[in-house]
Image (cartoon, helix red, strand yellow):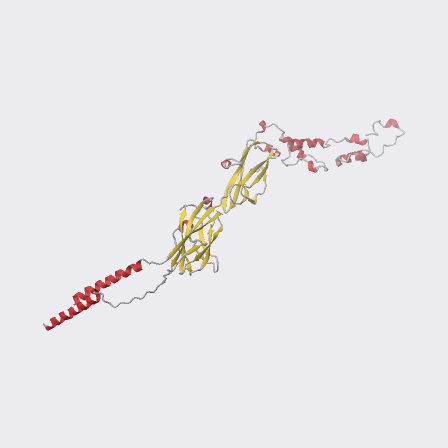
Amino acid sequence: MKKIAVPLFLMVFSLALLSVLPMWSTKALFRDVSKSKISIKAATLSLIIGDNWSRLSKPWADLGEIKPGDSGTVEIAVSNTGSIPGKLCVTELILPPEYLQVKSNDLCDLTIDPEGSVQIVIDWSLPAELHNTGLDGTEFGFSYSVLFENGYKITQKVILNGIIADPTDTPTPTATETVVPTDTQVPPETPENTPTSTATETPTEIIVEPTEIPVETPTPVEISTEVPTEVPSDVPTEIQVEPTVEIPTEPPAPTEKPAEVPDETPVS
Amino acid sequence: MKKRWALVILLGTIAVLVYGMFGSGAWFTSTATSTDNKLTAATLKLEVDGVNSVARTYVLDNIKPGDWALAGQAPLKNVGTLPGKLWFEIVNVTPSDGPLGALVYPKFQQNVAPWTRFGGDKVINLSVGERVDIMELAAGESIPIVAYFSWPQGPNDNSAQGASLTFDVIWHLDQIP
């Protein structure tokens, strides 16, 4: 009896187990899904200096041969071709040589909208006084760093270079002449026209002005014949003093002994 | 000897009884018919922005380094009759290893108090296929979820300029066992 009952029990239990297991293994529960599609695109921030990118590896502006007294202006367009606005900051990266005077407009914290642009304006001058400092033939170069940012950061360089011309090749207004007016006495009434070291003025203008100054004033002899009050106001004061000292206010009265007195004495 | 016969007789009687019960099928039976019975299965159905299956596409343009940009809001609703467990995963990132997906973090946030945030600890490229649990959603309950994308500033940002990518968010609603 036992021999039959045990196998029979095992068989029935196995059948029961086999029928229950699939119920658990399938996990037949409800489920649902839904889908969203997402597309994202990064902005662009693009900087163009000048008309294209090709100049970035080369000097942007070659000033060529410049000579003392020369000056000029370089204008550089900086454009934003990206899709978002950007902030610009232009700073001197390599300072220009000390003999070259450079001034640029202040371009920091300046927002450039997409498709917008701004101008970097660089004024340069080579003062005329530097002709004698032995700089002839000297090459020079300087550059500006352009930072453009809005999340992205873009940096580029603007390079300018040139060479100081040999004076033998450029016999134009001599720089030595331009130096002289700065040392001459200047009439007090025309201080604004005096030739100073401002390099923006051309040498020819500087040379002309001194000729208008009455350096060669009338001699004391000529003035002595006239009343001192008639002396022109623009005559230097020291010139006015001399005749008043030497010239008597009234001519001496004729003496009764003309033979003792020379004819020329009353005048001198 | 008597015992053996007694056992045989007992077994024989049992065999006859068993045959009578199972073999002939001679049970008392009675039938009664109940008509118009209706069996309705429970439902579990998820709608995103009022749509089941594929909801609308969310487009985010001009994202840039340093941004915390909003792509849009997706109201999720359990329109079924059973409660379900809501979770999502990101799939089908294209391109799969693009520069933008390597820099941008996807963040989903409940747009009602307590403003819980879900996911967003990995960039998009590394979030593919990862299950992010949101909450249990009762029958008829809805929850507004907003999708943000954050782009922390870093040294490789310029490499993703102008790049774009697309991906799918699969919203799951599973029956709670």
